[in-house]
Every structure is written in structure tokens, then in C-alpha cells.
Image (cartoon, rainbow, N blue to C red):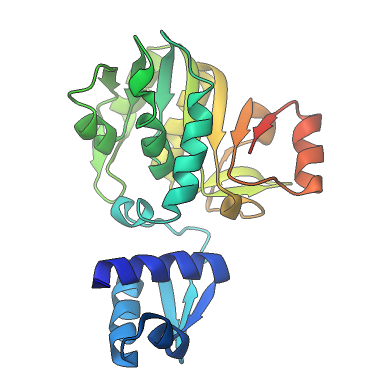
Length: 251
């Protein structure tokens, strides 16, 4: 197994179990403990985990803002599953606003069979990857946030406020029963708020790891969204609350 593949599996494991042990990983991948320590050191530098004596734990800071290249490798199967479910809510001729989250990027990959779509986005990754597609893509412009490959700031705000769209598709970092929807950085969060206010309906893409978590910045109240798309059935408490708020849950 190549080192990048092994580190990806370590990322998946630590997001699943919240902690890993060097000895267990060494046996699992049939490599030396020193090799595993080097893997963990690299992942720590990327902000994914914090090393501990004998292993590592998942970073759980409320202001955790991982680089896009790191986020784009985490829980990929779940993100693709969510993206395919979201695709069914999009019709030919729709106008969309799409944020720079990694799940939204997976959602964009599902739109090949849709016709005459217009997408307004502040995602550098979307602008680059779909430059030759049949989609009509409008860039928000703005100041580059290299860590997340996004455009933010007053220029981006002004662009978003010029348009009214059918649907906004966004991701988040946390979902809380009492604190609502939250994200990890303020510049992107502020732009997402403009997207929400200029869309007829809101689709939130959030895998099960986002539930019962609170990130650094409040993005929206739960009752502002129309659809919540996730990868597994939420708890009874969550389903009851979402039902009361007339949010359609797709899982």
C-alpha cells in the first residue's frame, strides 16, 4: 500500500473512532511503528489530528478550518452519497448558488445530465474544474482565501446580492439542536448568509459526523433551510425537531 493511501485510511479511521493507536495501525498496515509515527506527524501538520503518547486523537476545535485539499479527502464515500441524493432535487433550467465546501463540489459532479443550469459560486475549485462544462457558471469575484480555495469579501457580497436564484446548496461544519448551523470561518460564513437570503429554497448537505457539533461561527437557524441531506438516518430527537420545522430530511 502506498503512503498516501495508508494516510487516507488513517484519516477515515480517526474520523470514525476519534482516536488511533500506533501499535494497532502498525499491525493493520503491516509497517513499522516509526512509519506510522511519520504518517501521524504529517497528518498533524495538516491539522487533522493531534498526536498523543502512543497514538493520536481527532482535532475537535470549534474553529477547526482544515485546508480544502485535506477536507476533500475526508469521508469521500459519504459525500458522494449525499451529492447523488441532492441531484434529484435539481431541475433543468434551475439557477443555483453553490458554496466552496467539499460536499458541494461532489454535488457539482452529479449535474452532467441536467440542462441549462446557471451556477453562481465563490469556489475556485468549481470554477477551475467545470470551466469546460455545459454549465453557465458565474464567479462571485472577491479576495482569494487560499486555505479554502474560496473567494470572499465585499466584491463577492455585491455579486451575490445582484442575483435571485432557485436554490442555494451549502455545507457546514456543525449542526446543533439548540445553536443551529455553524461553520469554521467568518469570511465564508458571511458570504453564505447572503446566498441564503437570495435563494427561494436552501439545501444543506451534512454527513452524520456534523450532527450534535458546534463550530466557531453561527451560520443560520435550522428553520432557514428547506432540505437537509445526509448519509444516515438522524436520531429520533433530530427527526422530531426537523419535522416540527418543516425541513425535509433525505437520508
